[in-house]
Amino acid sequence: MKRYRKRFAFLFVLGMIVILSACSVEKQSGENNEANSTIQTSETVTVTRGTLTPTVSAQTTIIQASDFVLSSTEKGVFETCVTSGDKITAGGVIGKVSENEIKSPVDGTVISATNSSEIIPNNYPVATVRYTGFALNVEAENFLKTLPENTTLKAKFQVINGVGPTDILAVVTPATEYAEGSSTNTLFPQSNVLQCLIDKDTDVKIGQNATVVITAGTKENILLLPLSVIAGRQGKGMVTVIKDGEQIQTEVTLGATDGAYIEILSGVEEGDVVSSVPPNPVSYTHLTLPTKLEV
Image 1 (tube, rainbow, N blue to C red):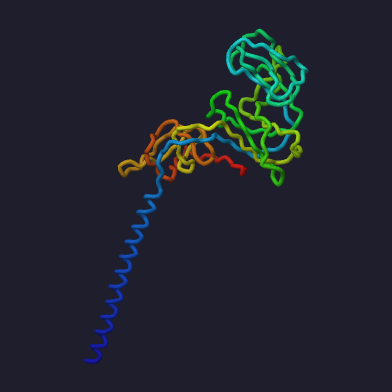
Image 2 (image 1 turned 45 degrees about the vertical axis):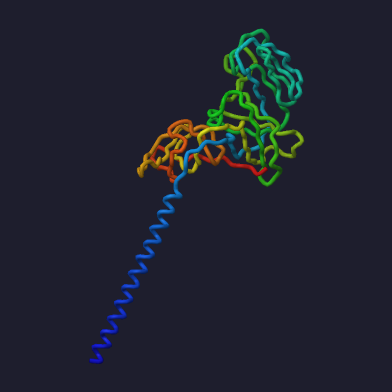
């Protein structure tokens, strides 16, 4: 009888251990479900309106500045104020189109200028100027596509293990070689490149590596999403919209970016809820984020 009592006591204790373990597992499962619910709730973002400063950045090398092009900002009759070989100071007038002055952003030498009294279209190169100093060239095709014409640009640069952050003197469009078969000495602009001219008082030298950050004027009251939620190329992307409990992959048209957020031109509306995890179609890749310089 004593042996049976011992066996019963053992089985009772074992049963209690099983019951307590089951309760613990159920409690932990409930806590995990609650935690997962919290995670799922936090892993969404909402399309909002706000402000954004378009930005592009690049690591590049200091070079000798090349001749740069000044272009008309409208169609009209061009009246030149300079001739080839003239010295010009920053702010000096190169010429006029319908009374709107075209000015040199830096001190330099006029290499060529369009003849007066000629009717020219918008964005026509009217003069080339030579700046005797250093510069940094940045490939900016996609960045420029998101901006209106004749946008004023500013920039800073940081030499790797050197001076900076330092303000760029001016952001200009470098010239290509003379157009083949051209009857003039006009150099044409490189449409996809921006040249950042460095002040002559800044202590740098050719060959130094630097990070450049170029910014345009702030855009206001635009639709915004974090870059991290979007899969896509420049101009087009995909997001996952959460609606009525369903996940809907949606194409969006993309605009300017500041490296953290991006302008949404179409595809979603203000207030739409989007998954913070971007879709991963084969035809899309993540966007490259611009670098930011501490100022």
